[in-house]
Image (cartoon, rainbow, N blue to C red; front, top):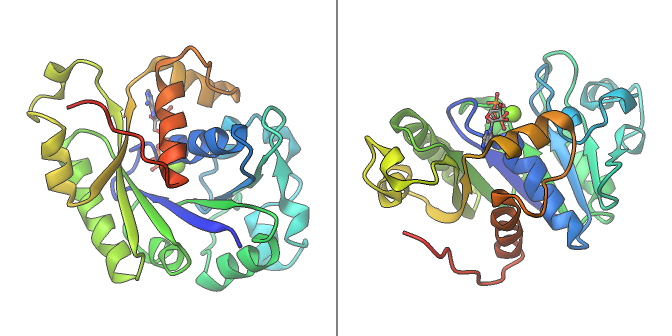
Length: 243
Ligand SMILES: Nc1ncnc2c1ncn2[C@@H]1O[C@H](COP(=O)(O)OP(=O)(O)OP(=O)(O)O)[C@@H](O)[C@H]1O
Ligand SMILES: [Mg+2]
């Protein structure tokens, strides 16, 4: 049965969809089968990241309305054979705990990981997803309001019974002095009250690969960071190697 990984943030625009897509790719390029389940109804973006915008026949909204079978809504990534997507509903609709559980029951034997790309905020959508998740990744950029949002999201996950919860720092400047007003990464970890599992660097090429629907270049700065994050998710010890 698939391990269900939820990606949340609290504050919007922290990098949840980027982490969902690129972690999914990193796992899938290393032979794991991965399904991305986009829960951000009305605000799709993973179809762009995977370059499949033109291939969507059915989405989460169709599954909820019963106008297609669950498998009919699965789209395969053209550049990463082990990676699939169910795109978010085109219009706002609430994705319930039952819907997520129904999908994971039907598809859970075909995938090693199901990644839930959650909407921003700490509302009912996140609660519903949290009731289904084995691991919660909380994404925060290095700024005080994102860190506060990450702490709130982490608490919601804890209260909803997500036993494993970890912090991913996104858009981290490559020069420590650019972290100001924060002094160092410990301040983010302490503020979010979560154990760190990965640091993703601020990098225009990462943004461009998401916008172009292409994989990360293996010479790029975040190729290794996502590879290491994927190995940690698999339970391998990879030192964080900085601070
Ligand atoms: N490491 C990075 N380096 C540079 N730009 C990044 C990086 N990660 C994310 N971005 C950019 O930041 C913006 C927000 O990222 P993303 O869409 O992944 O956030 P989100 O948390 O999913 O947002 P939302 O709350 O709207 O769903 C995007 O333009 C994305 O390309
Ligand atoms: Mg998003």
